[in-house]
Every structure is written in C-alpha cells, then in structure tokens.
Length: 182
Image (cartoon, one colour):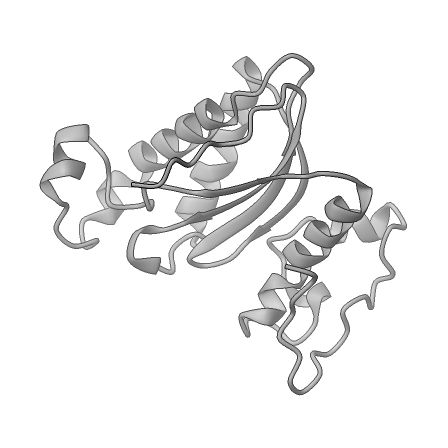
C-alpha cells in the first residue's frame, strides 16, 4: 500500500474531484442536486468554507474550496456532505447494486466512491488552471458544446463578475481534449 499523505495546510485552497460509485449518472438529478445543496449549506454552518469554483456533472463533481485560517480539515467537510446526501437519497438509490462486505460494515451507501482526489492549489497560476479545467469539464465530457450551456457550474458567476467573457470556451474545437496543464 502506498504511503499517501493528504495535504494539510490550514486555510489552504484545494481542488477536489468526487465520483459516484460505479460512475452512476445521478448527480444532476433534481433530488440529488437538492440534497447536495442542503448538505453544503448545513456543513458550512458548523464548518465554514468558501466555494471558489464548481462544476457538477452526472457522475462526478469538481470544486475548489478555501478553508478558514487555522483549519485544514477538508476531509471532515467532505464526509459530512457525502453522508448527508447519501441519507437524503437512500430511498432512491435502491438500484445501485450490491455493496461489498466492507461497505456494509462501515455503513456506507452505494452512492459515492470511497475515495476522492484532492490537490492543494499552489499559486494563482495553478488556481486559474484548475478553475478553467472545472469550467471546461462539461464540454470535455461531451455534455455541451459551449461552456455557457452547462447550468451546473460557477462559470456563470465568473461571467457576472467579469472574470470570463460570456463566450469563453466557445464551441469545442475538433481534437480539443480540454486539458489545462494537468
């Protein structure tokens, strides 16, 4: 087993990718989106964090969070959000397939993959590359042809603030894989 250590910088800014178990395409369904929004709001009441960027796709999500000064516990926040959404959506998740003995023993639902990907943002350039990646992701996965067409993203907030022009990431070009320096 690798000796992997998660980043641990209090007040840090982090990029995350969280995936549904077996890549179930359910995250953009109304009940799951509603539960996810409530989970975030509930978690932020007791464990604040700022959402700097976000894109919700059917089977995964990407986001960038900034934690408060002196706090590095993004894992706790992520666990609270996953648990809340799983609890709210349990009845509708009956067809997720069999759970392993390990998942059953831990009381885990079949909604989320156990792990998640995290990357500590190093500087402004790294931040911008990840924000671009997040906003381009729906195009990369073929859900839309233009970034502005995807409703489940902070792209629209960035346009309102003047960070991006409304036509940023216009029509996908032939052969464009959507990579932004990964």
